[in-house]
Length: 253
Image 1 (cartoon, helix red, strand yellow):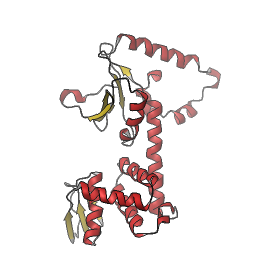
Image 2 (cartoon, rainbow, N blue to C red):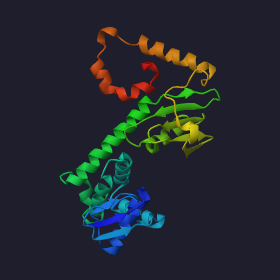
Image 3 (cartoon, one colour):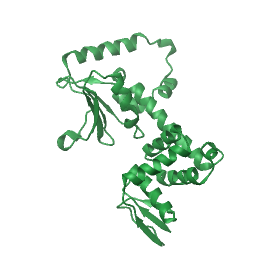
Image 4 (cartoon, one colour):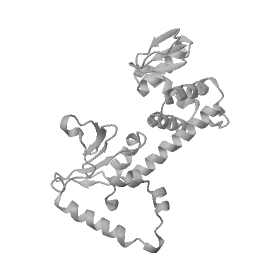
């Protein structure tokens, strides 16, 4: 069995693809720096992440496919699903070694798996756009904790940067412990450390701006007023508004 070790970054994965073609040997498995070696390893290559090599591979993918395919591959990486690295490696080999039509050949199990996984990630992105609820903190910053199934924050930060360009806001992924802070036209990736790592699902009254409590109550009243009680369908509601998001929704408190 041939093993490639890399740093578990997307650039590292693309560098591994570059190394595989340069060495003319392809790994049977991709491992992180601390992953244990399986039995019967015949060769173990250490991949050193190189942005120039990664960029060359990425430009090659774009030249042989399309912007949509590149976006789809990025979504698969952000899924963080087990063995997605091997799936991407197999797909990239098809892109470089096959005909241009292979990237849309859904009779191929790898191509179909990439498409389905990318669709799931994009669906989670749509959920984020629908269900993010900002709370205004006492210092004027708008704060939104989230806990998406996939790592979709990089896919939504541009939307919120355009939508709330004149505000200061922070969207924080409590599960992955990082977020994006936006101020004066720039969104910066941040990670809270120390005692700040305990991110609340809801700001306390002491942490809220004075008018935030009023706005939250107005939103709850509106949500209740537009409901037609005779037509309430809990099953349909949970399908369109998954229960895992309720803890962050003001109207569901």
